[in-house]
Length: 215
Image 1 (cartoon, one colour):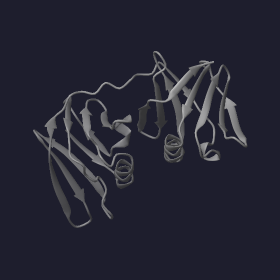
Image 2: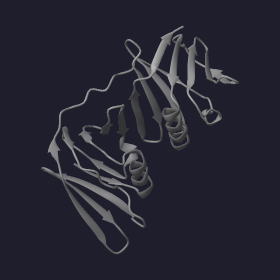
Image 3: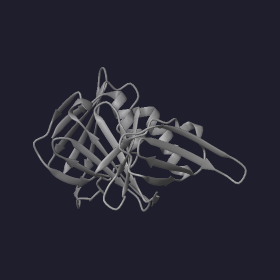
Image 4: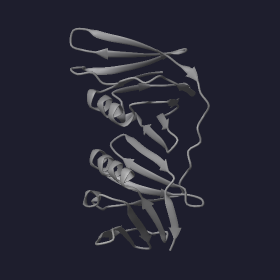
């Protein structure tokens, strides 16, 4: 496997995955990160890379690392047996870092059957919000003991479901939406919820154990 990543995209990887845990290599590159609370996946398509050449399918773990350095021209990643080589290319020199990798078990991420584009400015809200996916409208509501705030937009084929998002996750939605531009909610069998963000050449999503309720 060999691929080349531009500085802006390398910086994006740093911001999204400060602790990459599992990387699966196939037609696309998938980076998976998980904690006790959430499961995230980023799919990097061919257009994300300056150059991409991968003929293998492997799952492996790598230690925490950084993909970005100031003034770099590009980052070249090379997989050589059980070593991942990072070459940071500068104008007159290059820095090489070697990472030992180990085999890892494949991680199953709850899949979604339906995706609903949410065209609402979440910066209007600060606390826990309820998102109502009703037929042709999506409504976001934040409620306290003294006031209530709402925003709504159009929706295609809503599933008549309410999803509760806590303030911590709301901050992530705000940040990722600004970076990537498009935010969707994926709903699957028995309502597993995936929060999905789509940018140019990549798709970033994470599964979160949120409260849901049929309306």
